[in-house]
Length: 327
Image 1 (cartoon, rainbow, N blue to C red):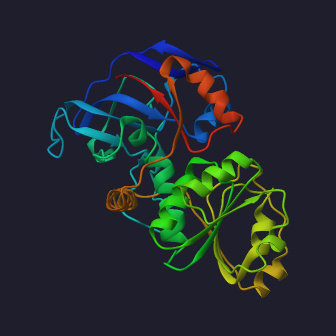
Image 2 (cartoon, one colour; image 1 turned 180 degrees about the horizontal axis):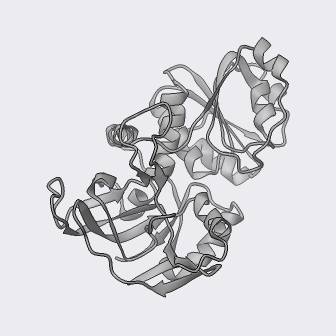
């Protein structure tokens, strides 16, 4: 089968052996696969490892075969892949044994994948293959950050720096579905307009004076994923006693913080990453209730995966980028 792999320091399209469903597994014929920024970091993490690895965490497709003891799914079922491996129940942090699909396990950028039946969920009927393919990783990341960790309530105001990311588009939709006020930022005027069209109430230029622009707002919750470039600015607009959730650091992992100002402000800081199967299922219920559709920016053919990587590296997208694997 055709797959996009990392091997001996290179990313390339290659032929790989077709997978077989062993006990407790299903084989999914992938229709579409979603890209995540995590995929960009795999080559550096693997270095010159000689064993070929199929990368990719997100995907949608049709069950082609089922292994022994699989009773919840049948051949022909339309499903999505849950990339949060072996994290079933909601918990304060992932359990021992948690991994993310796509390293060290073979991932979704291939025509087929064999995976535990515990790691697939039924595809929401109102979504296209491409929309379903980008749902799991970014969607559950946003859902956990917003609700499990952030405790968002109707009437809250949430502040989201970096409006164009895939997770940010879910955050906007989920927050608006829940009756919250949403304020976002972006350096790009077109992305600010797209965020407003998606439902954001206010979209600020990242370069503007946030404290001045938001002088009349009360920010209850900040969802941060940018890191060093925005963390202290975000903290500066948060109300005293407010909550800030961090799930990423695309612009730098380390931050200098004024601890005295932090504890005098009685702020609450939470870390978050991905989410459990329980939260994924709650998120699926949420999007079905509200008819929410993931924002798909661009669709590339599997053969054009390198171009898709470059597109994400340059942060050109608003929403998610997809690899179409088969019709």
